[in-house]
Image (cartoon, rainbow, N blue to C red):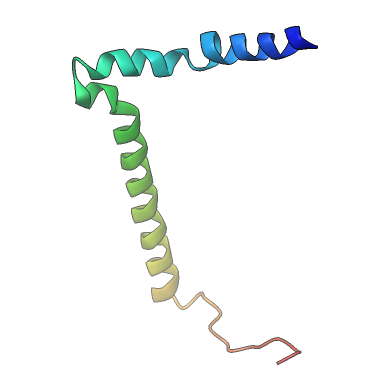
Length: 75
């Protein structure tokens, strides 16, 4: 049973988290390159937010949204 936990530890330390070790070493040389993944996700998030807001605006301007006021039966 003890070997199972050591195998799990070995997998995560040497395989799964290896890219993070590379980024940690790269950070000493170039901070912007080491955080490139974060910049990528921030740009993708910003673009999807802008797309979502434009879609909401187009549905609102075409009066396709159901704006009828309804409440739950328990109110």
